[in-house]
Image (tube, rainbow, N blue to C red):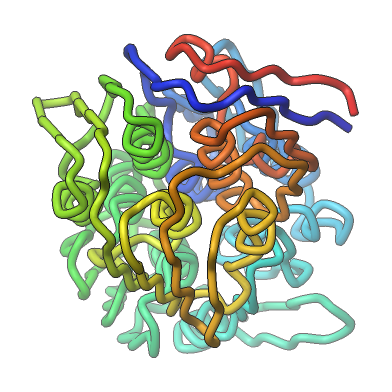
Length: 418
């Protein structure tokens, strides 16, 4: 096991280039199962979650080759329709192979997925959509077993919640289904748009990605695709908050500012200077920071994946901030760890009331999930003294060599064996 040691209270300054988006790469990797041939993905981040999805695809018979940030995926010879429980329990996104396998092979057996323990993320909406398209599905002994007699058929599907994963799974299944599928109350996230752009390159007709209604006309055969993954907006947001919490100045490159509108607006409200260019974001932090309120919501609302990070920022804002988490009920695992560092936080159900303090102090803390771990890195960068962060394998699942990027910004952080 490895850990981070951070000597904090240093304003970060410099330039950082974003990696590709993990949450866009995973569904596109699953989408490759729809194609009998080679796909080439560029700007693929080097993350353990990406490696795990690669293992899932290899188990099914896919040949994957990575060369720097390019991933070559050859799905010409898919040999199985089932993935092991051992792999699935490590990666929530493993469930995204369900739709493609069912559409391609007319059957699939996929374990109920694992991943970060941030709350219940049921797959009922995934299954509702696939059943509407003609699938026969049973859930038994921890597995989803799905079959379809003569192929999936397009349908009109309303999602009770704009689930990103359910939207993706239904889009993938619909891409080679007969007829037209309409997804209503679909996720509007940028990652959905990137998946749509990938599929359209292969010949699938898709309208409405980025809105709450997506219309897909299936194509029996999708041609091989070359595609570059969008920049990671959550990594961008994490570095933007890093500038704010340390009183530093960071230029973020390879960015898409249009993916971060709600965070940009919130940081400006707090008193952080933000300047935008076509593919660059400059963030300059200064104290004092104003207190604020945040409520996580589906896109285009405030991202749940940035809630832990902005909670760390609230710890150093003047007055009382209110953080409400409406997406995942267990996404406050970072709060007891922040309290070890001197934060004053009161939990009331799905709400955290954060009373700002003059400073945080270094402590030994534990990362329990990807974004909660990132919030502790941010707190450690701002804190006085040394912070020790354990369980950093969680952070590695979502951030490519985060310590190397921070060192280039002047941070005193090192990865050591625990």
